[in-house]
Length: 371
Ligand SMILES: Cc1cc2nc3c(=O)[nH]c(=O)nc-3n(C[C@H](O)[C@H](O)[C@H](O)COP(=O)(O)OP(=O)(O)OC[C@H]3O[C@@H](n4cnc5c(N)ncnc54)[C@H](O)[C@@H]3O)c2cc1C
Image (cartoon, rainbow, N blue to C red):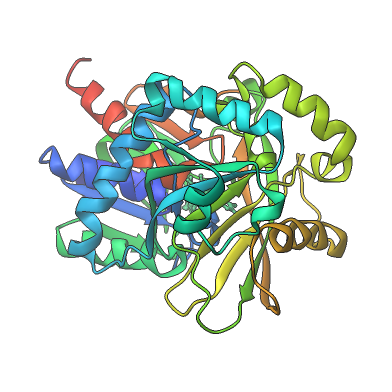
């Protein structure tokens, strides 16, 4: 059996590569060891974020990916749950960072809101804790846990062949070994998510890649509560490169070291998005290592919920689900490595795969014609 392209891994990175290769007229086979996606791609917020992504390639890829999601979602039957982002500033220093972003080239179309203007536009937030908020129109939210399967099913109708429930044991130039046979392809893309051991482990270790584990919650707010857009807070400004590399971010970090040491120690920042049934997906934390303990911490959940409650006018709420997720993490936002002739390892190593994968896939596959 032979294809132009074989992709190992059917998370969002593999699916984005499959779509892009198909667009180039290639015949594409995607192989995954699981019968359905259980990885990072269904555990995330489904938040396609542009604002705050690292300047340069990552920001550009996020802008492009957002446009691809917007075009593909209706075709694949995926609902856009909401659009836009409020970054809520509780501290003067956070306000300075966000206002600085508005002055950057990436700040085009962003809006700084405070006082009555913010109250009128966003009464769902606790005004007395806020210096103001940045509003971005760029972001999209999809329900990741169903959207990935819908995207996969739709790609199958477009001609991508999926072979699920089959672990790929070995990859050589021109072929992969799975299910007791060799399958051939001119190009092979290995997109294994956080499995850094099965295939090309040395590429991950040379890149100093480790695992990052996150805690997530689903919260049922009172009936009728509408978030309107995704939400982040001050803590996000020291995590995302698009903010943390701006002048003023270091002063914010110094202030947070004094005022929020526990949150920093657990890598906590606030993201809240909303689903069609009104429930909120809330997170998250970041713990790093070569292997992760499977036990979620109550203390970490409480810190995340405290930040949520401080900023959202929620009143009573109920936690209905808790889960963890893992992604590979390294200094650079992504790892694309030629591991053998015609074989590339592709990994988003910054927890931004839902936001950047389509742009990343285009960069990789458009380069093929140049080599
Ligand atoms: C809790 C959490 C929240 C996040 N929130 C966001 C967000 O809101 N926005 C955003 O942009 N990003 C977010 N991210 C990051 C994003 O989810 C990831 O960057 C992205 O899902 C990575 O996709 P992937 O395809 O590389 O990995 P995965 O989704 O993990 O898929 C990898 C696939 O490869 C398969 N595989 C591995 N090895 C083999 C093998 N040898 N043979 C066959 N199959 C194999 C696995 O079975 C798996 O299905 C979040 C991540 C987490 C964990």
